[in-house]
Length: 434
Image 1 (spheres, one colour):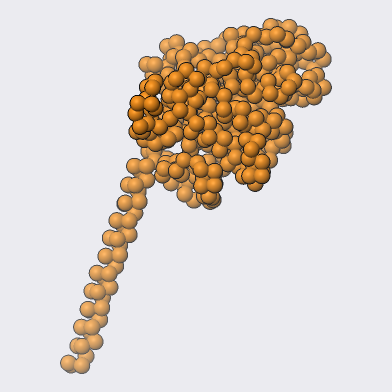
Image 2 (spheres, rainbow, N blue to C red):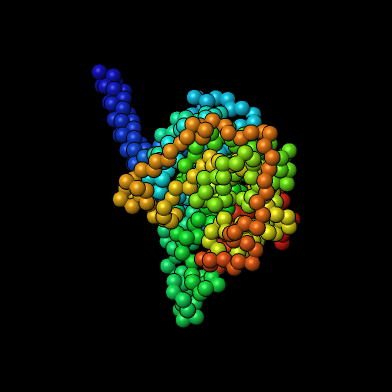
């Protein structure tokens, strides 16, 4: 009997030991999971699922090679999100080969974004294309609005080096930044003033940074578009898009080689944002506007080669920089082709960093209403129309020194680095040209 009991006691002890080990390991794994979840919730925004972790992410040493700012956890996570494929591919599995990608760049004006998304939902042919929404940082309400889109394929990208992503370091607000005129000579602070003696404002410089990062990313960084040679349409969150916009865009692009071979782009709206068009029976060639503009890769390559001119001009506005510094450097007049009636309208009543809440939406009664005539619901560009060139237009021209706000050397260098981040092999051999 004694010999039979010993093995049983050993078995009981072994089972108890294994139970203790199992419970201990389970507790350790549970603790690791909770700590990981908690750290992500601190560094990342609420409401975003962890599905982005299932996508491959090739984190290279690009930021070290070109000295980009050290990324925070949020910045890295946003860069991972940029590699996710478009949504709604189950609804629209195949896009026409000649589709025109639309890029909508947004900041933090949700009331405005609701208006442009609603207008896009009524655009004829919108289901045939890819909509890329470029965010200047991450704002949960903006993200929710975009994720609700079901009328076409949608891809979201987030500027990982937006000042909004860096709350206590460059390109955001750094504790050592100079703030008031004369600080650099009186205090041990960091920063270079603009031509008017003012130091950088992260909220202001984010406008130019985002546009330039977006252009480089869309043309040279995304799998979905870096192989495209044709036109890409760019619109902003305060642009109301008419139902005939996409069909008119297709016709203008088709007619441009014949009607205006020297035109650099096509536009959905007049360069004068207050104009709704002349209503003439002809096409109009004029200076390139900033509402609903579209150009191809050949033009982008010309713009990209002027990175140093773009990044060194002391004006925080990307469009004024283009008009007064980049386009004049091309040598020839930069014309765009458009129709006699607008297909897009700028409706913003206030600045970039206003209109971020229900009470301060800068929209009458929180809504925007446009009377869209029947003629604006269908393509109204006629192929038999001739082109009327508009010369000696008013507006910013070469020689204007800029409004300032872009004097800090750190901003200028970051801008140049954006031009290099996807083309290291090409730019390493000719970095002096940037």
